[in-house]
Image (cartoon, rainbow, N blue to C red; front, side, top):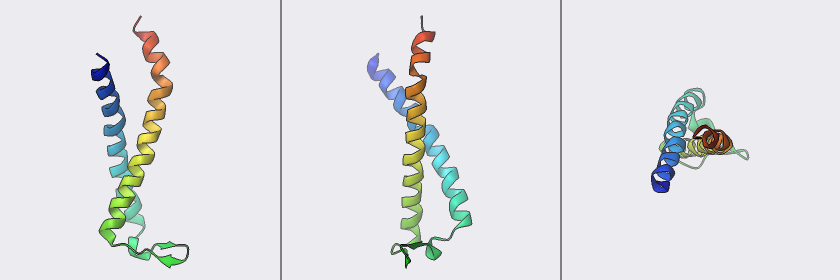
Length: 83
């Protein structure tokens, strides 16, 4: 039972955060061109595809952290509801 719950928690965390990251990446890179970005005053030294990939993974990590924290904080409520 715990492995099913553990896998279910992973899916509850990763799937919504994947959707949020896809949306955030689309919006962010619609507004900002990776070729115009600068880091510490220097142009970004990666290809546009690498910038899109790194941006998506960054947005996914931030969203997954937020979803995981929400699930962690909601856990006492879910355990109390099972009685």
